[in-house]
Amino acid sequence: MSVLKPTGAIEFVNVTLEVEGRRFLEGIDLKIPAGQTVAVCGQADSGKSFILRLLQGLPGMQKEDKVRLWGDIVVDGESIYDLNESSLRQVRR
Image (cartoon, rainbow, N blue to C red; front, top):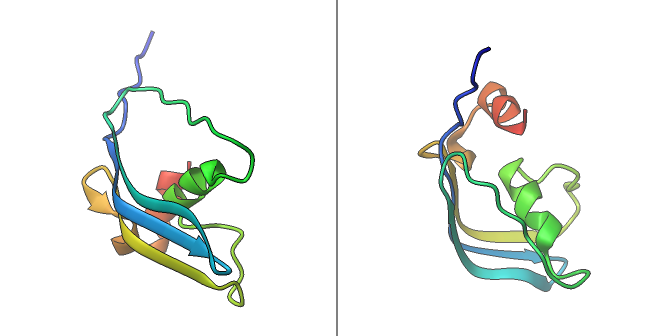
């Protein structure tokens, strides 16, 4: 029986996200160590799904959408914004 090793930590560093002039996340600092499971809870339309979308490079956003993003999202010690297309696909898997 093989055991899968968990990938590295996920970290949000002072992340603020604004979409179409509405702020969904503001100054979020979050660190999830490798192997941990986290549940994100909150009211509808509070920005929960944006956390996962940010980890995936904001899929589903259109060029004409007005999106402003501050801060950094780090996966395995590397900023998600520095990843090439192939590495980003790997993170999404």
